[in-house]
Length: 98
Image: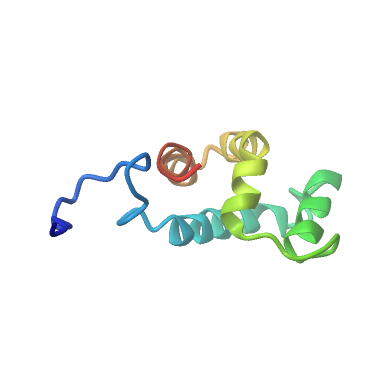
């Protein structure tokens, strides 16, 4: 049986092929770091998040895991800053990858 992999429609329940969740997660983290690395926007939660991301409490988790585990906090931060680009990407990750 041959694979018809030319279909560009993505469906996470069939396969993660073509979704590139890792790249999307890296991009969300890039948006996120613009805020949480700025002393004017960070707080105790984001400082803990940064330590966790760096492996401060064990092995460093991957970006997708961190996003999935903190989706609501990340969404709230992007909404607070009216970052529509980041919110759109976060929605895609939630729908396609989490």
